[in-house]
Amino acid sequence: LTNSFLSRSMCVSLDHSIHFHRPVEIDVEKWMLFYFRTEASSAARGTAVLQVFDGESHVLLATVHQEVLMRSEREEKSSL
Image 1: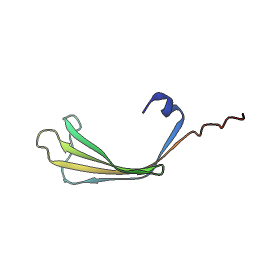
Image 2: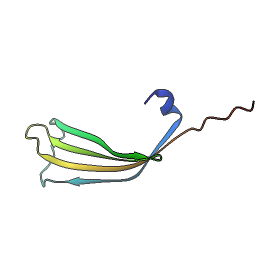
Image 3: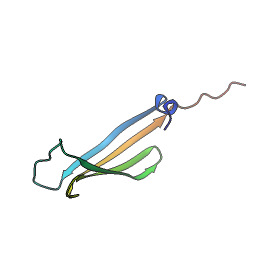
Image 4: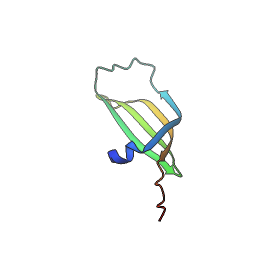
């Protein structure tokens, strides 16, 4: 995305959830691997999934799901 697009657009989180898969304390001082992917994107809406893995053992710690609404500014039609 370009800065021009971002300055003329709006992005709103419609729904999100976090699921923790391990009953352990997560040490935020250690490295973690974040794997992010877009599941679907159509008609100004999209869903994305983020998986968080332990940086050493590669164990899945948490999964984040998010649904977004994204709109861009409409261009004005020429009056010619």
